[in-house]
Image (cartoon, rainbow, N blue to C red; front, top):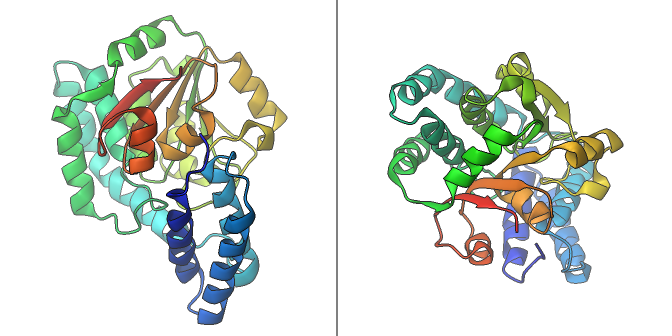
Length: 283
């Protein structure tokens, strides 16, 4: 997916939110904003938005000296959703269609995206869970179920902290021996890393690998050779979140994107209404 003009204001907002987490020094805030504005004026709009996201957070780390501004917030969301986990698991087990309910839970977890909305709170998460369980899904979940049944090698691309616990609920419905869960290669926004996979029990459930990149998405040429080989070999890829959609929407692989359309640019690109809960196969 290419960068649109509407993405530019989001770059500025995201940069300001992140640098304010990293430092209270307003001189650094100004340096970051001027740097992002300068970079945005020259960027290749044929690139996907997460490429600029990587630049933004690299600049913030360099100027602030803080290598992970979202570290404490990530722990808070992981711990919060882990406390919800037993109840959410019971709701899945009691439902008439556990796989359908687990997919909906996984999509609901995508609301925890601090790159899109820095004001996410517990009330929003609870409301999104309830909405997801009864909403009409955009896409075809039955095709996803068929792909899961026939898949021999499933690559599950994670997205955000907190959300990873919702992913765990879905992965518990999948054949664990066929699943590899993928995290980012380094801290970026509130995206999941190997530390989060360990903290939330994902490493005890399935194989986990990092993609060798700290882009907030999956830009294959920036990923490790090991990950690219796994990506090529997988016959089913489940990709969570906006960043993975932005970077992989043009792929010819058998990819199912699971996300909530929080951004009007994304919903427009996918052909759905803003706020939709999405199970969309790559075309």
